[in-house]
Image (tube, rainbow, N blue to C red):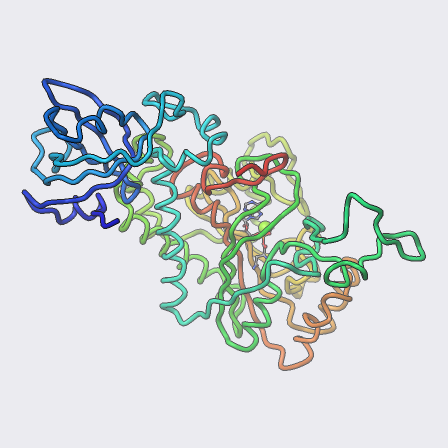
Length: 462
Ligand code: 4AD
Ligand code: MG
């Protein structure tokens, strides 16, 4: 079925050109012997008005095409007399491809985002979600463009794993054991995973970092970009059980290099989306009023702040603000602290680095003070933590000591430790939560509205 995408017609259509437009009817109205159908085909934010004369041989299709119907229109592109649109299509033939009756849930009135989440299979047809998923697409390509232009190799790290890469125990189990039947048991009466598919316990990955590290320890600079799973019971606007993460890893790099890369990366993403999705961003700015495109552009050109964890604790303690979770050295920041630092203190993205070792993962490099590790978080307004990263512990003895202290099981991480035995080198990387980046850029307020099928506690529909 040959067709002309609306995005293309609006860009370089010509008066009188014969076109074939396929799309879904947003609205229809009648006036003086004509029907006016507003059609969107998903290719862009804009709609195209189709004008159909009652005398058309195929007019019955127009009569039956209600809101939500899929239609094909053969017609002529004409400069539009109507305000706010450059082109319309004068129909020569209309084909009703798929009806939608009055039960179609997306009738013209506005719908709450909560309601739209219940019809995730239809919500991409709305302005909001069409815009979101096109921005998501542009942002994905921006990620690849950034790293590819710098010679980073895209590494495909596994989704199934035996190891807890963060040591935080927030893993989903994967098994083919018959959970309805009687599970095989060991002598000690524990489930015998030796009889499971992989011969040992398996999980969905919480990170691709550890495999990314061995790729970087041979290819130099790599990045991952893939789905990540966390079985944390967090019902918040910024947590998902399944999210996408980008994790670059650089050999021969330290924490300062890591922050430099993260800053360049985020700015490049902002610039790319501002340039390539003007209509979508303008829509988010006008509709939800949580972003200003100009400010996104300014951020892409400002320099991010950097403070040590200890300095950040001091800023928070002296701020005079009453936090729900009291501030003291050694605490992990909550979103209220993260947001205060980025929104009120610095009013822009800020890196916090050198965290107390007890609140960070086993792989972060120990600093000489014996108390902190070379980790960093990038905090941004409205979201809090957008990026988490670190220089990795490349020294064998110190890594082993840390893993013992933190009771990290070594049996599935021998290969990770091995890397420190053969040509170990300083290296660093970070992870950017892709959906959090989308929240930041679009100003949407719930992470569940940044991907087609959100997974969170109690929800696995669609
Ligand atoms: O800080 P995190 O847990 O760091 C890592 O996973 C490291 N392995 C990254 C690395 O150094 N290679 O997660 C990184 C980022 C967070 O800053 C946040 O943006 C996002 O991933 N993130 C989540 N996004 C949505 N839902 C969740 N449950 C998330 N958990 C983390
Ligand atoms: Mg983190």
